[in-house]
Length: 436
Ligand code: ZN
Image 1 (cartoon, helix red, strand yellow):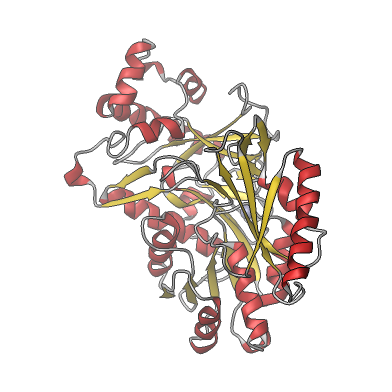
Image 2 (cartoon, protein in one colour):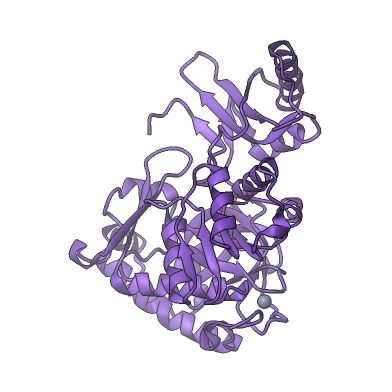
């Protein structure tokens, strides 16, 4: 299989009317199962006097309430499982940025489908069985490492499960094993590129050709930076731990939006404030309903991810709807002293300041009488001041910048390059008040 190949022609290129028919059949079965086997849904249906038979069209789905992350946390650990535990063969969890974790269970069939979705994703980016795939997503309870691992094995590629860690070691392995494909978070890829430069490893001497990146919001300029520093083509991938991990949507060779596996997931776009559907093409929050999950079906799960949909068929031959790359998370914000603070705002304010690296973290402490916000920022590898006086001056300069942007006192702490770990994605915010 080569570039332009499609892993599952039947489902990836199905005419829209057929996809919608398939979705309706699977939706009805899912609603039935959820109402019967998950107490949370059974109770909800009863309270609202809704019967599974009321779902006669895809639009009828809007009669059902949303499932929120908070609901999943309340169901910790097994409250959302629709099968007995003996039929669950894998358990993952998502840490989230604050609060209790959410748990995801998989039946043997769920794992098979998951592997297949990731295979679609890899093939769409041009990965073949001749590739050597180095995965630096974290393994463990986080879904991305294992998700890509089994997907890549299933298409016959040679998989190196490095997980994350020392970036220099990643470079050595890339060089020695002649890795052709790398998979992980985009900012860690940049760290690897920086490590290669430090080690004087010329990217031309490596065998890399493709990279698949996700689990955090990244922009086009980051893609260009990864591509030019590692000499690869970079693809965006999207997954959501709560509905099953990576493979939810993926870019094809056109890189004009991410194809959603609509035979497995029904997606809606709603206004994040009102919850009302927004017209096609308009920005809103993605809401997912699983269509084929045995162990943990979810109805109208609010992702918190802001994107927009394009239903037009794609030049690649796939008919699956495309979502724009995630623009931001509606819930990825800190509320400090009654104000919303978005990490993107902070990133923007930091960009023009020379000597700063890319990684930063917002650490909020609510135990003081007034919320206290600390911003930890990595200094750049080579352009940072090399004396304490210089560093203190720089901290003050950044503090002033952030204070005027956020309108509140901020303590800035500059830290060594590589000391902030964002390889699990979405960890720009730490609520130091909670002890999870
Ligand atoms: Zn396409």
